[in-house]
Image (tube, rainbow, N blue to C red; front, side):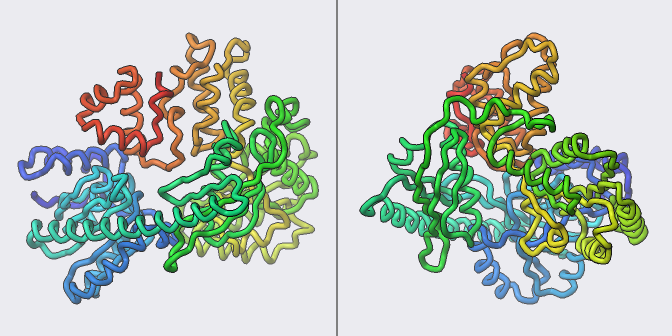
Length: 594
Protein backbone atom coordinates (compact mmCIF):
# COMPACT_ATOMS: atom_id res chain seq x y z
CA UNK A 1 0.00 0.00 0.00
CA UNK A 2 1.49 3.40 -0.95
CA UNK A 3 2.59 5.85 1.77
CA UNK A 4 1.05 9.31 1.91
CA UNK A 5 2.12 12.71 3.08
CA UNK A 6 0.71 13.76 6.46
CA UNK A 7 -2.69 15.43 6.35
CA UNK A 8 -4.73 16.70 9.26
CA UNK A 9 -8.20 17.16 7.77
CA UNK A 10 -11.09 14.74 7.50
CA UNK A 11 -10.99 15.35 3.75
CA UNK A 12 -7.49 13.89 3.56
CA UNK A 13 -8.67 10.85 5.53
CA UNK A 14 -11.56 10.36 3.11
CA UNK A 15 -9.15 10.54 0.17
CA UNK A 16 -6.94 7.90 1.77
CA UNK A 17 -10.02 5.79 2.39
CA UNK A 18 -10.91 5.93 -1.30
CA UNK A 19 -7.40 4.72 -2.19
CA UNK A 20 -7.59 1.90 0.35
CA UNK A 21 -10.89 0.66 -1.07
CA UNK A 22 -9.26 0.44 -4.51
CA UNK A 23 -6.14 -1.36 -3.24
CA UNK A 24 -6.49 -5.09 -4.06
CA UNK A 25 -4.34 -6.00 -1.04
CA UNK A 26 -6.67 -4.24 1.43
CA UNK A 27 -8.87 -6.68 3.31
CA UNK A 28 -12.58 -5.94 3.91
CA UNK A 29 -11.89 -5.89 7.66
CA UNK A 30 -9.43 -2.99 7.25
CA UNK A 31 -11.72 -1.11 4.86
CA UNK A 32 -14.63 -1.43 7.30
CA UNK A 33 -12.42 -0.19 10.12
CA UNK A 34 -11.40 2.91 8.15
CA UNK A 35 -15.06 3.62 7.45
CA UNK A 36 -15.83 3.46 11.17
CA UNK A 37 -12.86 5.71 11.93
CA UNK A 38 -14.19 8.35 9.55
CA UNK A 39 -17.65 8.08 11.11
CA UNK A 40 -16.08 8.61 14.55
CA UNK A 41 -14.34 11.70 13.09
CA UNK A 42 -10.97 10.57 14.41
CA UNK A 43 -8.18 13.02 13.56
CA UNK A 44 -5.61 11.28 11.39
CA UNK A 45 -3.02 14.01 11.91
CA UNK A 46 -2.49 13.46 15.65
CA UNK A 47 -2.72 10.74 18.27
CA UNK A 48 -5.22 11.31 21.07
CA UNK A 49 -5.59 8.16 23.17
CA UNK A 50 -7.43 8.92 26.45
CA UNK A 51 -5.63 7.96 29.65
CA UNK A 52 -7.15 6.00 32.52
CA UNK A 53 -5.29 6.06 35.82
CA UNK A 54 -4.83 2.74 37.64
CA UNK A 55 -6.26 0.28 35.09
CA UNK A 56 -7.73 -2.85 36.68
CA UNK A 57 -4.99 -5.45 37.10
CA UNK A 58 -7.12 -7.54 39.45
CA UNK A 59 -9.40 -8.92 36.74
CA UNK A 60 -9.27 -12.62 35.72
CA UNK A 61 -7.89 -11.51 32.35
CA UNK A 62 -4.97 -9.62 33.89
CA UNK A 63 -4.22 -12.35 36.42
CA UNK A 64 -4.15 -14.97 33.69
CA UNK A 65 -2.21 -12.92 31.15
CA UNK A 66 0.60 -11.33 33.18
CA UNK A 67 2.51 -14.53 34.05
CA UNK A 68 2.30 -15.64 30.41
CA UNK A 69 3.53 -12.24 29.20
CA UNK A 70 6.41 -12.36 31.69
CA UNK A 71 7.54 -15.73 30.33
CA UNK A 72 7.19 -14.51 26.73
CA UNK A 73 9.13 -11.35 27.57
CA UNK A 74 12.10 -13.48 28.62
CA UNK A 75 11.95 -15.45 25.37
CA UNK A 76 11.86 -12.25 23.28
CA UNK A 77 14.67 -10.56 25.21
CA UNK A 78 16.24 -7.71 23.20
CA UNK A 79 14.01 -8.37 20.17
CA UNK A 80 12.29 -5.19 18.91
CA UNK A 81 8.82 -6.58 19.73
CA UNK A 82 6.34 -5.35 22.31
CA UNK A 83 3.71 -7.55 23.93
CA UNK A 84 0.50 -6.03 25.32
CA UNK A 85 -2.79 -7.09 26.80
CA UNK A 86 -5.86 -4.82 26.89
CA UNK A 87 -9.32 -5.02 28.39
CA UNK A 88 -12.50 -5.14 26.30
CA UNK A 89 -12.61 -1.33 26.05
CA UNK A 90 -9.11 -1.07 24.60
CA UNK A 91 -7.37 0.06 27.82
CA UNK A 92 -3.76 -1.15 27.76
CA UNK A 93 -3.35 -3.13 31.00
CA UNK A 94 0.25 -4.22 30.51
CA UNK A 95 3.06 -3.60 28.05
CA UNK A 96 6.38 -5.41 28.00
CA UNK A 97 9.31 -4.50 25.77
CA UNK A 98 13.05 -4.83 26.36
CA UNK A 99 14.20 -2.87 23.30
CA UNK A 100 14.90 0.69 24.47
CA UNK A 101 14.47 2.34 21.07
CA UNK A 102 11.08 0.68 20.57
CA UNK A 103 10.02 1.69 24.09
CA UNK A 104 10.74 5.34 23.28
CA UNK A 105 8.80 5.17 20.02
CA UNK A 106 5.79 3.52 21.68
CA UNK A 107 5.74 6.16 24.40
CA UNK A 108 5.68 8.90 21.78
CA UNK A 109 2.47 7.50 20.30
CA UNK A 110 0.90 6.85 23.76
CA UNK A 111 0.87 3.08 23.21
CA UNK A 112 1.46 2.51 26.91
CA UNK A 113 -0.41 1.18 29.98
CA UNK A 114 -3.51 3.17 30.86
CA UNK A 115 -4.11 4.59 27.38
CA UNK A 116 -7.25 3.61 25.45
CA UNK A 117 -6.70 2.33 21.91
CA UNK A 118 -10.31 1.78 20.89
CA UNK A 119 -11.15 2.67 17.28
CA UNK A 120 -13.39 5.58 18.32
CA UNK A 121 -10.31 7.37 19.71
CA UNK A 122 -7.38 6.13 17.61
CA UNK A 123 -9.00 4.83 14.43
CA UNK A 124 -7.78 1.69 12.69
CA UNK A 125 -5.13 -0.07 14.78
CA UNK A 126 -4.43 -3.63 15.82
CA UNK A 127 -5.98 -3.45 19.27
CA UNK A 128 -9.05 -1.37 18.42
CA UNK A 129 -9.87 -3.20 15.20
CA UNK A 130 -9.52 -6.65 16.78
CA UNK A 131 -11.90 -5.59 19.55
CA UNK A 132 -14.40 -3.94 17.18
CA UNK A 133 -14.49 -6.84 14.72
CA UNK A 134 -14.03 -9.68 17.20
CA UNK A 135 -11.46 -11.24 14.84
CA UNK A 136 -7.67 -11.60 14.72
CA UNK A 137 -6.21 -8.77 12.66
CA UNK A 138 -2.88 -7.68 11.23
CA UNK A 139 -2.56 -3.92 10.70
CA UNK A 140 0.58 -3.19 8.73
CA UNK A 141 2.19 0.21 8.33
CA UNK A 142 0.03 2.62 6.39
CA UNK A 143 -3.12 0.62 7.07
CA UNK A 144 -3.20 2.49 10.39
CA UNK A 145 -5.63 5.41 10.33
CA UNK A 146 -3.52 7.83 12.40
CA UNK A 147 -0.31 8.92 10.72
CA UNK A 148 1.83 8.59 13.85
CA UNK A 149 1.15 4.84 13.92
CA UNK A 150 2.08 4.08 10.32
CA UNK A 151 5.61 2.99 11.13
CA UNK A 152 4.31 0.07 13.21
CA UNK A 153 3.17 -3.46 12.41
CA UNK A 154 0.60 -4.91 14.82
CA UNK A 155 -0.91 -8.38 15.20
CA UNK A 156 -3.83 -8.47 17.63
CA UNK A 157 -6.13 -11.32 18.67
CA UNK A 158 -9.35 -10.99 20.72
CA UNK A 159 -9.39 -12.88 24.02
CA UNK A 160 -12.74 -14.53 24.73
CA UNK A 161 -14.18 -16.05 27.86
CA UNK A 162 -13.54 -19.79 27.48
CA UNK A 163 -17.14 -20.85 28.17
CA UNK A 164 -19.39 -17.84 27.57
CA UNK A 165 -17.28 -16.67 24.58
CA UNK A 166 -17.81 -13.05 25.59
CA UNK A 167 -15.09 -10.54 24.73
CA UNK A 168 -12.64 -9.95 27.59
CA UNK A 169 -9.87 -8.03 25.83
CA UNK A 170 -7.08 -8.50 23.30
CA UNK A 171 -3.46 -9.61 23.03
CA UNK A 172 -1.29 -7.46 20.78
CA UNK A 173 2.20 -7.76 19.31
CA UNK A 174 3.76 -4.55 17.97
CA UNK A 175 7.03 -4.10 16.10
CA UNK A 176 8.57 -1.40 13.94
CA UNK A 177 10.38 -3.95 11.79
CA UNK A 178 8.67 -5.21 8.66
CA UNK A 179 8.83 -8.99 8.56
CA UNK A 180 6.71 -12.08 8.25
CA UNK A 181 3.14 -11.15 9.02
CA UNK A 182 2.26 -14.84 9.15
CA UNK A 183 4.76 -15.59 11.91
CA UNK A 184 3.72 -12.55 13.93
CA UNK A 185 0.06 -13.52 13.71
CA UNK A 186 0.79 -17.17 14.54
CA UNK A 187 2.60 -16.11 17.71
CA UNK A 188 -0.22 -13.74 18.67
CA UNK A 189 -2.83 -16.49 18.20
CA UNK A 190 -0.77 -18.92 20.25
CA UNK A 191 -0.36 -16.52 23.18
CA UNK A 192 -4.05 -15.51 23.12
CA UNK A 193 -4.93 -19.23 23.24
CA UNK A 194 -2.66 -19.72 26.27
CA UNK A 195 -4.32 -16.81 28.06
CA UNK A 196 -7.80 -18.20 27.37
CA UNK A 197 -6.73 -21.62 28.70
CA UNK A 198 -5.38 -20.04 31.89
CA UNK A 199 -8.61 -18.05 32.34
CA UNK A 200 -10.56 -21.32 32.02
CA UNK A 201 -8.40 -22.92 34.71
CA UNK A 202 -8.74 -19.92 37.05
CA UNK A 203 -12.52 -19.71 36.51
CA UNK A 204 -12.93 -23.41 37.20
CA UNK A 205 -10.97 -23.19 40.46
CA UNK A 206 -12.87 -20.08 41.56
CA UNK A 207 -16.29 -21.53 40.80
CA UNK A 208 -15.51 -24.80 42.60
CA UNK A 209 -14.29 -22.87 45.64
CA UNK A 210 -17.35 -20.61 45.67
CA UNK A 211 -19.70 -23.57 45.27
CA UNK A 212 -18.07 -25.34 48.22
CA UNK A 213 -18.45 -22.31 50.49
CA UNK A 214 -22.02 -21.79 49.26
CA UNK A 215 -22.89 -25.40 50.12
CA UNK A 216 -21.28 -25.03 53.56
CA UNK A 217 -23.44 -21.94 54.20
CA UNK A 218 -26.60 -23.71 53.02
CA UNK A 219 -25.92 -26.82 55.15
CA UNK A 220 -25.23 -24.98 58.40
CA UNK A 221 -27.48 -25.58 61.41
CA UNK A 222 -29.66 -22.53 60.64
CA UNK A 223 -28.91 -21.71 57.00
CA UNK A 224 -31.66 -19.22 56.12
CA UNK A 225 -31.55 -17.35 52.79
CA UNK A 226 -28.10 -17.59 51.15
CA UNK A 227 -26.68 -15.89 48.06
CA UNK A 228 -23.28 -16.53 46.44
CA UNK A 229 -21.94 -14.34 43.66
CA UNK A 230 -18.83 -13.62 41.60
CA UNK A 231 -18.22 -12.12 38.17
CA UNK A 232 -19.54 -15.20 36.38
CA UNK A 233 -21.90 -17.03 38.73
CA UNK A 234 -24.98 -16.31 40.87
CA UNK A 235 -26.27 -19.01 43.27
CA UNK A 236 -29.22 -18.72 45.67
CA UNK A 237 -31.12 -21.22 47.76
CA UNK A 238 -34.88 -21.73 47.83
CA UNK A 239 -35.28 -19.79 51.08
CA UNK A 240 -33.91 -16.64 49.42
CA UNK A 241 -35.87 -17.20 46.22
CA UNK A 242 -39.09 -17.39 48.23
CA UNK A 243 -38.31 -14.55 50.64
CA UNK A 244 -37.26 -11.92 48.09
CA UNK A 245 -39.29 -11.56 44.89
CA UNK A 246 -40.20 -9.00 42.25
CA UNK A 247 -38.37 -5.70 42.30
CA UNK A 248 -36.89 -6.58 45.71
CA UNK A 249 -35.11 -9.47 43.99
CA UNK A 250 -33.46 -7.22 41.39
CA UNK A 251 -32.58 -4.59 44.00
CA UNK A 252 -30.93 -7.20 46.22
CA UNK A 253 -28.85 -8.56 43.35
CA UNK A 254 -27.74 -5.08 42.28
CA UNK A 255 -26.61 -4.18 45.79
CA UNK A 256 -24.92 -7.57 46.21
CA UNK A 257 -22.93 -7.12 42.99
CA UNK A 258 -21.68 -3.71 44.10
CA UNK A 259 -20.75 -5.00 47.56
CA UNK A 260 -18.95 -7.97 45.97
CA UNK A 261 -16.89 -5.58 43.84
CA UNK A 262 -15.44 -4.04 47.01
CA UNK A 263 -12.92 -6.78 47.73
CA UNK A 264 -11.96 -5.30 51.09
CA UNK A 265 -15.45 -5.34 52.63
CA UNK A 266 -16.54 -8.05 55.04
CA UNK A 267 -19.14 -7.65 57.74
CA UNK A 268 -22.79 -6.61 57.86
CA UNK A 269 -24.62 -4.17 55.66
CA UNK A 270 -28.30 -3.22 55.61
CA UNK A 271 -30.08 -2.09 52.44
CA UNK A 272 -33.58 -0.70 51.88
CA UNK A 273 -35.67 -2.74 49.42
CA UNK A 274 -38.32 -1.17 47.14
CA UNK A 275 -41.11 -2.85 49.13
CA UNK A 276 -40.12 -0.95 52.25
CA UNK A 277 -38.44 -3.95 53.88
CA UNK A 278 -34.82 -4.03 55.02
CA UNK A 279 -32.37 -6.73 53.92
CA UNK A 280 -29.55 -7.33 56.37
CA UNK A 281 -26.59 -8.89 54.57
CA UNK A 282 -23.83 -10.72 56.44
CA UNK A 283 -20.96 -10.66 53.97
CA UNK A 284 -18.04 -13.10 53.86
CA UNK A 285 -15.43 -13.79 51.20
CA UNK A 286 -14.70 -17.12 49.58
CA UNK A 287 -10.92 -17.17 49.68
CA UNK A 288 -9.02 -20.29 48.74
CA UNK A 289 -5.52 -20.73 47.40
CA UNK A 290 -4.83 -17.01 48.01
CA UNK A 291 -7.52 -16.08 45.52
CA UNK A 292 -10.89 -14.33 45.95
CA UNK A 293 -13.42 -16.78 44.51
CA UNK A 294 -16.48 -14.67 45.23
CA UNK A 295 -18.76 -13.47 48.00
CA UNK A 296 -21.23 -15.28 50.27
CA UNK A 297 -24.26 -13.37 51.60
CA UNK A 298 -26.34 -14.67 54.49
CA UNK A 299 -29.56 -12.67 54.21
CA UNK A 300 -32.13 -11.67 56.81
CA UNK A 301 -35.23 -9.80 55.61
CA UNK A 302 -36.76 -7.47 58.18
CA UNK A 303 -40.29 -6.02 58.10
CA UNK A 304 -43.32 -6.51 55.91
CA UNK A 305 -43.95 -5.15 52.43
CA UNK A 306 -45.88 -1.90 52.44
CA UNK A 307 -49.09 -1.74 50.44
CA UNK A 308 -48.44 0.21 47.25
CA UNK A 309 -45.31 2.24 46.46
CA UNK A 310 -43.28 3.37 49.46
CA UNK A 311 -44.40 6.82 50.57
CA UNK A 312 -46.20 7.36 47.27
CA UNK A 313 -47.94 10.42 48.62
CA UNK A 314 -44.62 12.12 48.98
CA UNK A 315 -43.29 11.33 45.53
CA UNK A 316 -42.39 14.99 45.04
CA UNK A 317 -40.09 16.50 47.68
CA UNK A 318 -42.07 19.27 49.35
CA UNK A 319 -40.89 22.75 48.38
CA UNK A 320 -38.16 21.49 46.04
CA UNK A 321 -40.09 19.95 43.16
CA UNK A 322 -37.89 16.83 43.21
CA UNK A 323 -39.49 13.55 42.21
CA UNK A 324 -38.78 10.46 44.27
CA UNK A 325 -39.43 8.91 47.67
CA UNK A 326 -36.91 6.08 47.95
CA UNK A 327 -35.03 6.15 51.27
CA UNK A 328 -31.58 6.62 49.74
CA UNK A 329 -32.78 9.47 47.50
CA UNK A 330 -34.57 11.27 50.34
CA UNK A 331 -31.50 10.86 52.54
CA UNK A 332 -29.24 12.35 49.85
CA UNK A 333 -31.66 15.27 49.36
CA UNK A 334 -31.84 15.95 53.10
CA UNK A 335 -28.05 15.86 53.61
CA UNK A 336 -27.46 18.09 50.58
CA UNK A 337 -30.13 20.55 51.71
CA UNK A 338 -28.60 20.79 55.20
CA UNK A 339 -25.14 21.55 53.77
CA UNK A 340 -26.53 24.02 51.24
CA UNK A 341 -28.53 25.98 53.81
CA UNK A 342 -25.54 26.07 56.16
CA UNK A 343 -23.33 27.42 53.34
CA UNK A 344 -20.87 24.54 53.81
CA UNK A 345 -18.49 23.41 51.10
CA UNK A 346 -20.01 20.28 49.61
CA UNK A 347 -18.89 17.35 47.44
CA UNK A 348 -21.71 15.65 45.52
CA UNK A 349 -20.78 12.20 44.23
CA UNK A 350 -22.97 10.31 41.78
CA UNK A 351 -23.07 8.58 38.42
CA UNK A 352 -23.65 10.61 35.28
CA UNK A 353 -27.32 11.51 34.93
CA UNK A 354 -28.24 10.55 38.52
CA UNK A 355 -29.55 14.05 39.31
CA UNK A 356 -26.68 15.96 40.92
CA UNK A 357 -27.27 19.07 38.80
CA UNK A 358 -31.04 18.88 39.19
CA UNK A 359 -30.66 18.66 42.97
CA UNK A 360 -28.36 21.70 43.12
CA UNK A 361 -30.66 23.78 40.91
CA UNK A 362 -33.74 22.84 42.96
CA UNK A 363 -32.03 23.84 46.21
CA UNK A 364 -30.83 27.11 44.69
CA UNK A 365 -34.35 28.00 43.55
CA UNK A 366 -35.91 27.18 46.91
CA UNK A 367 -33.13 28.12 49.36
CA UNK A 368 -30.82 30.40 47.37
CA UNK A 369 -32.02 33.62 49.00
CA UNK A 370 -30.67 35.86 46.25
CA UNK A 371 -27.36 34.08 45.86
CA UNK A 372 -26.00 33.65 42.33
CA UNK A 373 -25.35 30.16 40.94
CA UNK A 374 -22.10 29.95 38.92
CA UNK A 375 -21.23 26.73 37.07
CA UNK A 376 -17.61 26.01 36.13
CA UNK A 377 -16.62 23.21 33.74
CA UNK A 378 -13.22 21.52 33.53
CA UNK A 379 -10.93 23.42 31.12
CA UNK A 380 -10.97 22.19 27.53
CA UNK A 381 -7.21 22.55 27.18
CA UNK A 382 -4.36 21.46 29.47
CA UNK A 383 -2.08 24.25 28.28
CA UNK A 384 -0.46 26.44 30.92
CA UNK A 385 -2.36 29.50 29.76
CA UNK A 386 -5.74 27.71 29.85
CA UNK A 387 -5.23 26.19 33.30
CA UNK A 388 -3.98 29.47 34.79
CA UNK A 389 -7.00 31.30 33.37
CA UNK A 390 -9.31 28.60 34.74
CA UNK A 391 -7.81 28.82 38.25
CA UNK A 392 -8.01 32.61 38.16
CA UNK A 393 -11.69 32.36 37.21
CA UNK A 394 -12.40 29.99 40.12
CA UNK A 395 -10.60 32.28 42.57
CA UNK A 396 -12.50 35.37 41.37
CA UNK A 397 -15.87 33.63 41.60
CA UNK A 398 -15.19 32.35 45.12
CA UNK A 399 -14.05 35.83 46.21
CA UNK A 400 -17.70 36.94 46.10
CA UNK A 401 -19.47 35.62 49.25
CA UNK A 402 -22.88 35.68 47.57
CA UNK A 403 -21.82 33.19 44.87
CA UNK A 404 -22.58 29.47 44.86
CA UNK A 405 -19.77 28.07 42.70
CA UNK A 406 -20.34 24.61 41.21
CA UNK A 407 -17.20 22.88 39.94
CA UNK A 408 -18.63 20.18 37.70
CA UNK A 409 -16.94 16.80 37.07
CA UNK A 410 -13.77 17.45 39.07
CA UNK A 411 -12.75 13.83 38.35
CA UNK A 412 -11.94 15.01 34.80
CA UNK A 413 -9.23 17.38 36.00
CA UNK A 414 -5.67 16.37 35.19
CA UNK A 415 -3.47 15.40 38.16
CA UNK A 416 -1.36 18.58 38.02
CA UNK A 417 -4.48 20.77 37.86
CA UNK A 418 -6.00 18.95 40.85
CA UNK A 419 -2.86 19.77 42.83
CA UNK A 420 -3.04 23.42 41.83
CA UNK A 421 -6.74 23.58 42.67
CA UNK A 422 -6.11 21.98 46.06
CA UNK A 423 -3.40 24.55 46.77
CA UNK A 424 -5.73 27.40 45.77
CA UNK A 425 -8.64 26.16 47.90
CA UNK A 426 -6.46 25.32 50.90
CA UNK A 427 -5.30 28.93 51.22
CA UNK A 428 -8.78 30.47 50.96
CA UNK A 429 -10.59 31.66 54.05
CA UNK A 430 -13.82 29.65 53.81
CA UNK A 431 -15.63 32.08 56.14
CA UNK A 432 -15.16 34.92 53.65
CA UNK A 433 -15.77 33.14 50.36
CA UNK A 434 -18.64 31.95 48.26
CA UNK A 435 -20.03 28.47 48.74
CA UNK A 436 -18.20 25.73 46.82
CA UNK A 437 -19.99 22.64 45.49
CA UNK A 438 -17.97 20.02 43.60
CA UNK A 439 -19.48 17.15 41.62
CA UNK A 440 -17.79 13.94 40.50
CA UNK A 441 -18.49 10.31 39.65
CA UNK A 442 -18.07 7.64 42.36
CA UNK A 443 -15.81 5.31 40.33
CA UNK A 444 -13.37 8.21 39.92
CA UNK A 445 -13.11 9.19 43.62
CA UNK A 446 -10.68 7.46 45.96
CA UNK A 447 -10.89 7.36 49.74
CA UNK A 448 -7.87 9.63 50.06
CA UNK A 449 -9.09 12.21 47.54
CA UNK A 450 -7.51 15.51 48.60
CA UNK A 451 -10.28 17.66 47.16
CA UNK A 452 -12.95 15.68 48.98
CA UNK A 453 -11.21 16.34 52.32
CA UNK A 454 -11.53 20.11 51.77
CA UNK A 455 -15.33 19.84 51.93
CA UNK A 456 -17.33 19.83 55.14
CA UNK A 457 -19.91 17.45 53.67
CA UNK A 458 -19.79 14.65 51.09
CA UNK A 459 -23.06 13.19 49.79
CA UNK A 460 -23.60 10.29 47.38
CA UNK A 461 -26.58 10.60 45.03
CA UNK A 462 -27.94 7.07 44.38
CA UNK A 463 -28.15 5.71 40.82
CA UNK A 464 -31.58 5.10 39.34
CA UNK A 465 -31.17 1.30 39.51
CA UNK A 466 -31.25 1.68 43.32
CA UNK A 467 -34.47 3.69 43.20
CA UNK A 468 -36.93 1.10 41.87
CA UNK A 469 -39.95 2.64 43.56
CA UNK A 470 -39.16 6.04 42.03
CA UNK A 471 -39.24 4.86 38.42
CA UNK A 472 -43.05 4.83 38.36
CA UNK A 473 -43.16 8.38 39.77
CA UNK A 474 -40.54 9.56 37.28
CA UNK A 475 -42.34 7.98 34.32
CA UNK A 476 -45.57 9.76 35.28
CA UNK A 477 -43.70 13.02 35.84
CA UNK A 478 -42.00 12.92 32.43
CA UNK A 479 -45.20 11.86 30.66
CA UNK A 480 -46.98 14.88 32.13
CA UNK A 481 -44.01 17.12 31.28
CA UNK A 482 -43.96 16.15 27.61
CA UNK A 483 -47.72 15.47 27.29
CA UNK A 484 -49.22 18.29 29.41
CA UNK A 485 -52.71 17.25 28.33
CA UNK A 486 -52.34 14.25 30.65
CA UNK A 487 -53.64 11.82 28.04
CA UNK A 488 -50.76 9.32 28.30
CA UNK A 489 -50.24 6.47 30.75
CA UNK A 490 -48.02 3.41 31.11
CA UNK A 491 -49.25 -0.19 31.13
CA UNK A 492 -48.23 -2.40 34.10
CA UNK A 493 -46.13 -4.70 31.86
CA UNK A 494 -44.26 -1.75 30.34
CA UNK A 495 -43.68 -0.26 33.79
CA UNK A 496 -42.28 -3.57 35.04
CA UNK A 497 -39.86 -3.66 32.11
CA UNK A 498 -38.79 -0.07 32.75
CA UNK A 499 -38.11 -0.98 36.38
CA UNK A 500 -35.93 -3.92 35.31
CA UNK A 501 -33.88 -1.84 32.89
CA UNK A 502 -30.34 -1.13 34.25
CA UNK A 503 -30.42 2.56 33.19
CA UNK A 504 -26.64 3.08 32.84
CA UNK A 505 -27.26 6.79 32.14
CA UNK A 506 -29.75 7.03 35.01
CA UNK A 507 -32.59 9.61 35.12
CA UNK A 508 -31.24 11.41 32.06
CA UNK A 509 -31.71 8.23 29.99
CA UNK A 510 -35.20 7.55 31.36
CA UNK A 511 -36.26 11.10 30.52
CA UNK A 512 -34.89 10.71 26.98
CA UNK A 513 -36.86 7.48 26.48
CA UNK A 514 -40.15 8.94 27.77
CA UNK A 515 -39.64 12.16 25.76
CA UNK A 516 -39.24 10.13 22.56
CA UNK A 517 -42.35 8.06 23.28
CA UNK A 518 -44.42 11.10 24.26
CA UNK A 519 -43.69 12.77 20.92
CA UNK A 520 -45.34 9.88 19.09
CA UNK A 521 -48.88 11.22 18.93
CA UNK A 522 -50.31 7.77 18.15
CA UNK A 523 -49.21 6.40 21.53
CA UNK A 524 -51.71 6.97 24.34
CA UNK A 525 -50.90 4.04 26.61
CA UNK A 526 -47.25 2.99 26.65
CA UNK A 527 -47.06 -0.74 26.10
CA UNK A 528 -44.14 -3.15 26.00
CA UNK A 529 -44.05 -3.13 22.20
CA UNK A 530 -43.67 0.68 22.22
CA UNK A 531 -40.47 0.63 24.29
CA UNK A 532 -37.14 1.07 22.46
CA UNK A 533 -34.58 -1.78 22.38
CA UNK A 534 -32.48 -0.27 25.19
CA UNK A 535 -35.36 -0.93 27.62
CA UNK A 536 -35.73 -4.61 26.72
CA UNK A 537 -32.59 -5.92 28.39
CA UNK A 538 -31.79 -6.92 31.95
CA UNK A 539 -27.99 -6.94 31.71
CA UNK A 540 -26.15 -4.24 33.66
CA UNK A 541 -22.99 -4.51 31.54
CA UNK A 542 -21.64 -1.33 29.99
CA UNK A 543 -21.53 -1.86 26.22
CA UNK A 544 -19.27 -0.38 23.61
CA UNK A 545 -20.88 1.40 20.65
CA UNK A 546 -20.42 -1.65 18.42
CA UNK A 547 -21.95 -3.97 21.04
CA UNK A 548 -24.93 -1.67 21.51
CA UNK A 549 -25.54 -1.67 17.74
CA UNK A 550 -25.32 -5.47 17.67
CA UNK A 551 -27.70 -5.77 20.64
CA UNK A 552 -30.24 -3.45 19.00
CA UNK A 553 -30.03 -5.33 15.69
CA UNK A 554 -30.80 -8.61 17.49
CA UNK A 555 -33.69 -7.04 19.40
CA UNK A 556 -35.26 -5.53 16.28
CA UNK A 557 -34.83 -8.82 14.43
CA UNK A 558 -36.58 -10.75 17.19
CA UNK A 559 -39.41 -8.22 17.39
CA UNK A 560 -39.92 -8.27 13.62
CA UNK A 561 -40.03 -12.09 13.61
CA UNK A 562 -42.28 -12.66 16.64
CA UNK A 563 -39.35 -13.77 18.83
CA UNK A 564 -38.39 -16.56 16.40
CA UNK A 565 -34.73 -17.07 17.32
CA UNK A 566 -33.88 -19.42 14.45
CA UNK A 567 -35.27 -17.12 11.73
CA UNK A 568 -33.58 -14.08 13.27
CA UNK A 569 -30.24 -15.90 13.46
CA UNK A 570 -30.51 -16.95 9.80
CA UNK A 571 -31.31 -13.43 8.66
CA UNK A 572 -28.38 -12.03 10.67
CA UNK A 573 -26.03 -14.66 9.24
CA UNK A 574 -25.14 -16.35 12.55
CA UNK A 575 -25.81 -19.78 14.00
CA UNK A 576 -28.63 -20.37 16.47
CA UNK A 577 -26.11 -21.29 19.18
CA UNK A 578 -24.27 -18.00 18.62
CA UNK A 579 -27.60 -16.19 18.73
CA UNK A 580 -28.44 -17.66 22.13
CA UNK A 581 -24.97 -16.79 23.45
CA UNK A 582 -25.38 -13.18 22.35
CA UNK A 583 -28.87 -13.01 23.86
CA UNK A 584 -27.50 -14.20 27.21
CA UNK A 585 -24.61 -11.78 26.91
CA UNK A 586 -26.88 -8.78 26.34
CA UNK A 587 -29.54 -9.88 28.82
CA UNK A 588 -32.24 -10.22 26.14
CA UNK A 589 -35.31 -12.01 27.51
CA UNK A 590 -37.36 -13.57 24.66
CA UNK A 591 -40.60 -13.50 26.67
CA UNK A 592 -40.39 -9.72 26.92
CA UNK A 593 -40.49 -9.28 23.16
CA UNK A 594 -43.93 -10.71 22.45
